[in-house]
Length: 453
Image (tube, rainbow, N blue to C red; front, side, top):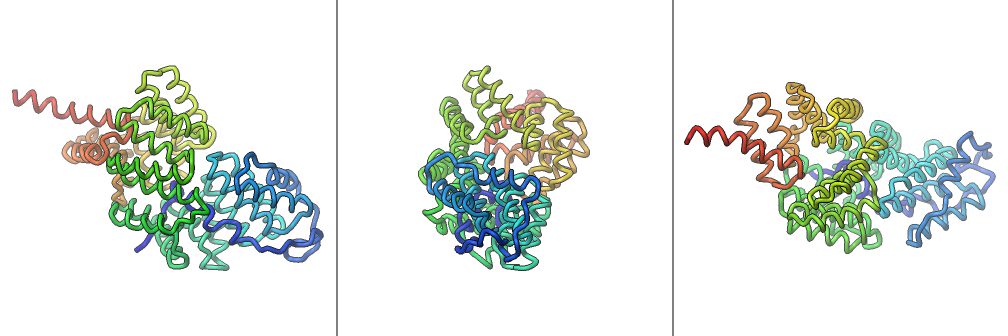
């Protein structure tokens, strides 16, 4: 069965291929009526502000900037219909993905609000809203928006993608897989194939995942370089997870050739540099990525790279940036950062528990498990870790966490096997975690060596 990628990969993979040119109608609606032909009502409180935000001038001179400017000029002259507002929103999403600037999603949301104020059930506007909700990590609401569209058009490919992404993050893997299969059936192409590949990879089937990812790359549109760059980056990540640094670096480099200074690919090359001990190169790449996309995970990696390079003051600043970004918008990454570093154990558990209350995917389960482990709640940690491994995902971090938890509970044989499997799979999966894993095995080996002597 062909399947698809969760929000971790798919939000960006959707861009462009199902963007505004496919989903907008060419004719403008007269200024005095709504898209349904009814007399226009006075804007609701807050609607004027949403429209003003959506019509803000973009910074740049790219093709998508020109598209935004053209749509904004049309809408500034006349209110237009839901189709024009949703077209503007899709353009803002493409710009946000290409630039790595998450603040631009606020403009996409404002566009969706303006569109839905004119036509509450407009399909393209609901699809747009679903994409924004995915970015905001409001997965249940994104699922609901997709289901509203699918209740009237069960073949809407963009809604199927949103449903699959949202369901995966909510922990409903079979729902995600079924929606992805329907998407592949309705519209085989880059967005559906990337989902297929990622879901296969989550199930531990890397060989099939790579074959499907090749289909996704082959289906890429040169006119939409960001979507192709994202797909190449995710393909390269599959090799990185296997410790194949050379193949991974080739993939990340190819992504950068397609979309220059693409933050996810810069981060990928930095991970390879860290694995090879090229600390200065890793710092350079991560500083470039962080400048474009100052999120918590990139700042965390930058801190690790600066520590390795001997810049402890710079590392402290990077870690502070990671905490700040996590507090603002990414509590799961912040919880994992705290738990990985053995910091703020109560806060790590509070954040992970809060995230688990609204999100049930395997990476949330793993973060919760590790926070529970650091807090000394080993039985609960084991249960969460079991859920994180339920799909058979071959991710060294998941395997290491599971092994360490089992060793702490006295399940030494199984625990050591999992820790060793993590290091065999990707010996540099994380600077802190990999070092801990090696130390844990060394401590387990030491008594045996002493006994032999």
